[in-house]
Length: 63
Figure (cartoon, rainbow, N blue to C red):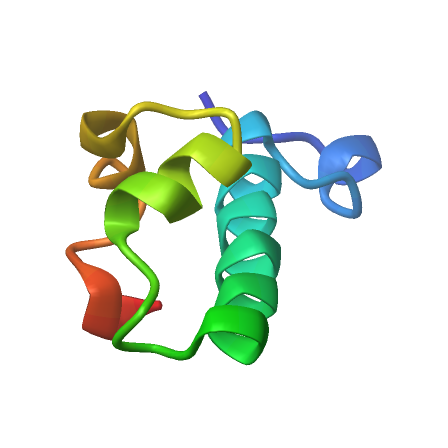
């Protein structure tokens, strides 16, 4: 079902989760380096399981 005009400015739950993953990944990449950061650690930092992270991103390079 399409979102109505009053909801277009409000991000969906999936959009908020994806942004949280990106925020955590950015922080961990900055502090631990790309190679030193695992997808598991990113998922944990975002409050997800690793398989849950794959619902939003295809892998580390997609982040």
